[in-house]
Image (cartoon, rainbow, N blue to C red; front, side, top):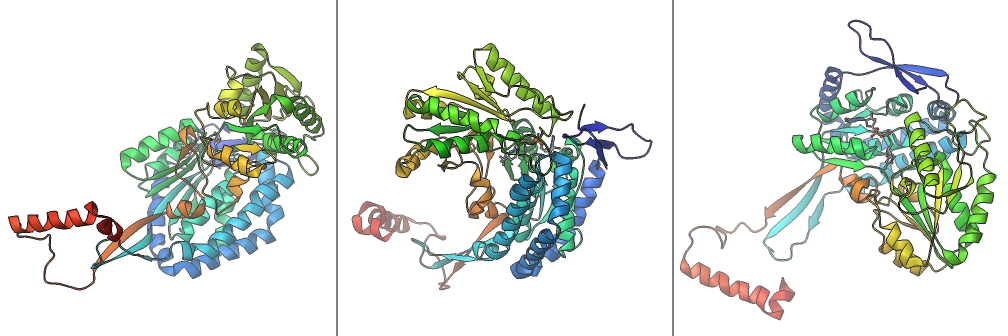
Length: 510
Ligand code: NAD
């Protein structure tokens, strides 16, 4: 049974979708699919509202974000309940990964955007008669399109950065979790954000595609590689920038000197938090042969202690989107056919009607198997023995993806050195997944994991257009390279070139 079902069309009305809880299969909501006309009207309204919002300046914009933090703290239970209802994830996970990280993101950007986006004078290496000033301006209206796995924070965080940079935002959350997206609009509205500056439009891929075509000035997209490609193609045609935060197949490398107690707990958390539906979840493990048996023993034992269910005291919730569960099942079937062994799990949880798949540990896997090559995005932990760290790194880099990675060793310096050799946008030594939750850290991937960064100075500046303003300082009557051209001027230029780039003194000066 689908969690999103189309309802019969009513003449003259928008399409509608019905949502079910992935945990209980109960009907939880109906939403309207906003049309291309709706989206264009919202973008137009946002364009007008943006001018006033940008004029308010950093201090006032920051005040709105801070009021949003207070509002979120006051209404955290209500927000957790909505996220829990739409995704089935354990309440603690909604609180920690969605609400706490959102509070931090709002406070962080409210406090720091002014400094990071302050106008700067850049000293010039050569043209001492000029002054260069860099000015960071808002882009205008930013379209933000988001997925269902962390439906609140993955929408709120780019919105916070785009807003602090002075943009207006049109947000299109996943059709699987539209209410969590609507909460982002509601939160900012309650915090005093002027009308039209942030609007949430709901619907499926059609609404998302309409937003990309609606004349926005940037698209910030988080989702699958397949949709990311489509979004990038349209942005290319329309010549607007896009940031693509796409999938991952994050490797974990366990070195011979790893603290196995911490590494095995990290593997279980990294693979099964949010039922593995995290772009930076641990999707494949390479463990050095010498410690593989002990590592696997601990992993299986800790996986067995996880409590699956929904609500209060559970650890691992359901799969949120049924087609993803089918991918997980296909990966396990393929692995078993090719000789892998299930050490624990390996099936849907028969205790529930909803989309629960048991946390699963697989051994004897290799790189022929889908589970080691394609994103599973579910509660699977395939573990592969390797001869040594060199083999682990070679296999870790043998992937079309390159989002995050984690390395476990007692030697932190060596861990950092190994991390440098990984082809990934982010890497973690002796921990996992945390990169998205560190606002200072530019987050994003290489290869099929995407283009561009969210978070960090780089991420914030991706919501701006940088204007360079060069001012002549002394106002002489003419410049040496202006008209007229003549042979004497060419001889003089050659001498200057020889001095500047052909002598040690010149190279030092330039
Ligand atoms: P998806 O690509 O199916 O959908 C993402 C969003 O795009 C949804 O809002 C959807 O309605 C919209 N959409 C669909 N078709 C569109 C189109 N043609 N034009 C514009 N928008 C369109 O992804 P999903 O299934 O919701 O999310 C799961 C994927 O997201 C996984 O691959 C996961 O790794 C990835 N993800 C990446 C990050 C990251 O930061 N790198 C974070 C979370 C999830």
